[in-house]
Image (cartoon, rainbow, N blue to C red; front, side):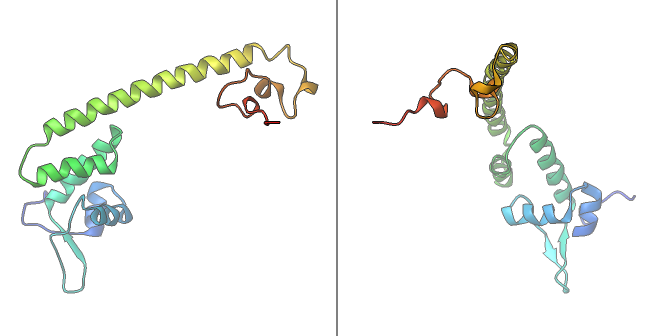
Amino acid sequence: MATLTASDLLRIGQLSDRSQVPIKTIRYYEELGLIQARKRTSGGFRLFDVEALTRLAFIKRSQSLGLSLQEIHDILAIHDQGQRPCEEVKHTLQAKVAEIEEKIQALTLLREQILALIAGADGLKAEAADICPIIENRPNTPDSPRHHQPKG
């Protein structure tokens, strides 16, 4: 394929082919303000410039790092004002690392709880539960339905 120059304009289908982003997704990104068509043909077809390819690649990479479309929008808005958004990117990625750490802790706790259930499963009597004692015979915890006893 030929290399695009800044003056070349692509229809949405061509942009989709080159970026490997579905047309429907490109339209959605346009609605969100993540990309924009430079102009439309007399027939109403959207025409995009080479910058749209760069932005779509940036969006895809950002999403692969766990950034939300809102976070990506905020970063691109800084770029669109003529500034480098690197400080915002750094701050957003630091927040993402903190979220990941919290999820790791929660998943580690969940793993320990599941392993404890598995370890105690052999000694449980099936008659003592409505469905399965492995899950039902757990200690009462604040989020457990059995923890809440009717007031009487």
